[in-house]
Image 1 (spheres, rainbow over the protein chains, first blue to last red):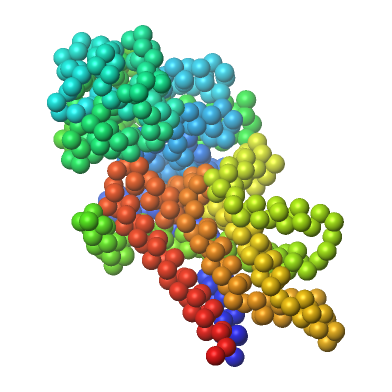
Image 2 (image 1 turned 45 degrees about the horizontal axis):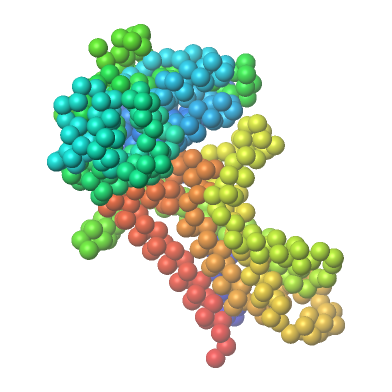
Length: 307
Length: 232
């Protein structure tokens, strides 16, 4: 009888693994606060449910980490009937996925890379959505004397001059690209220098490394605010034009990639620039941090942003 | 030290409060990994037995491949499966990318060589005359397999635990083919990595402890079965 009991147990475990191959229920944790106006459970089909409901959104880890998508995506899904799969990776990977037609819409914040991407005919439109800003943080005693620098480039130059430790994300993310652009504008190339180190990781992890090593690093304001209480780093430079972090949403081009969900991608892009959404963006984070994390910019020209 | 204690407290609190997100993530982890382990058993045990007993040209090369598969880095398995499942890939029509099924496939690729290789080693431990004796008594192929499995149940259960351990703890493949989408493909390992990268160390540790507890419970069950079989 013993072996039978063993096999029975194994069978039970097997069945436990195989039962309901269906995906666990969609998240509706946030629905507690929303109105009961529309009930859009995954199974019911409200009038106008799109033929191809899956939309793959390639976006960045910092967008995901800010928590903004956790608010916006369910809103979009409820209103449109689409089911969004947000893939949060580095900017480089997000753009590469779009450039292969493996995503339907891309939401990133790396203007130069985006323009190259658009020039290669990968997208149908490049819509300005919002911006937040980067800040340069460093040890409270500011050994390189960055405080008071006239511009981001000047601040970076002071760090290079003092050979003060600087931690870079080094992962081709939007933050990393912004940082590289500032070094370039300052006429410097710190790669290979002993004081310049790359983590290859996300913003939270990079901030921790900078905190431990009492080094400088470039971070988006949102992540810094969220982590501030656990860090000794302080803002040493902010507000410079080169520190603006501008987000664009770009639906992937169906003419180039027939397999994309063009309608879905476009619907998401339209949603991001819609007035109601822009208002939500403008208020996000205000209650938690005392200041909003993002500034809505839909409809503006790119040079108007931040002024 | 208080970071660890804080994490333990938070882990217990998460469990007891029945936090929906945590329960969902834990359930998905179990579901996916148990399925992948079961599938690799179904394939690995017969394949391993055959590899151990059969003789054919290139057998050692094939065996070498299987053993190499045991050391396959999960992230490489994830990358390979991703390329296959891309829209532009050969299996793109199946629309499996970023679904739990894709994670099961990737984890199967990781666990199957593990189970196969260990089965081969287990079967080769048997007295070669046993097989002849069973066949001489008139057993069919499947009966032979069944009897051999019963004879090697101790190392085979170890193979199950090894396969399960390999997939429940891997994060590279799950991240790549699953996408770590909240509510759809987020499992305990990918959730832990996410929370760590966000800097929420308490939560990350708590999730990690939860995962360890889960692995312990499953392995405890399997170990109990394995050790109960032992004749006195």
